[in-house]
Amino acid sequence: MKTFHSLVMRGCLMLAAGNLIAGEAPVPGPSESPTAVTAAALKRKLAASELAWRKLRDECKGNYEYDVKFTSWVGWSHTTTIVVKDNKVVARKFQQRSNKPAEPGKAPPAADTGTTGWQETTAAELGKNREGAPAKTIDELYQLAAEVIGKGVQEHQRWTTVFDTNGIIRCFGFTDKRIADDAPLTGVSIDALRPTK
Image (cartoon, rainbow, N blue to C red; front, side):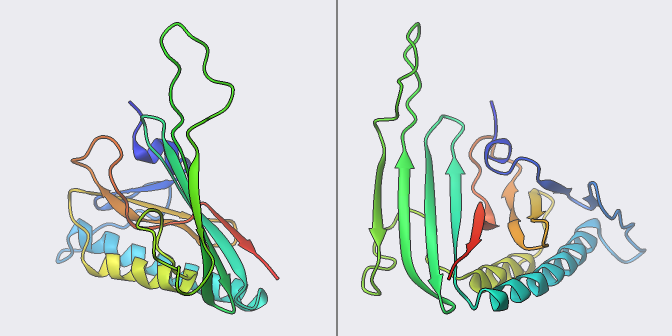
């Protein structure tokens, strides 16, 4: 069975407890535990990424939108789009697809008939729906990522960090290695970021 990581965060840089894969490979000093070294490396990566984000934010004058996607190993999926103007969230859109599998011996359906969704477009509506990603700016997501590291890096956590070619955060957080399928990500996940006018 495929896990949350293989479906949603393919191509991610995986951080195992104490070892950075495909990157720096710090060796713990005599008084440092592997998890302490990992936390320090995560903080450095996040700080560099936040500088890249601030540059892009200033270039687009705080006008952008981004998507947060989730796909379950059993087939259903959803996407939340957050719209930001002048560094403030002004809208949130949600779309869920059931992606029902074909019955045994039958061809899959030509189109997904199980699509549902909603939009929040006023200040009074924002956050009204319980589904989907929270209405946060990218600046708030960087704060959340820093808070996640601040709680400490544990042996049972599988860390995932992904940055785009500009260095801006795409995925930053951890899942619990003790959960096999659809383990929730604690941290930040952004599927697509689009500067707007």
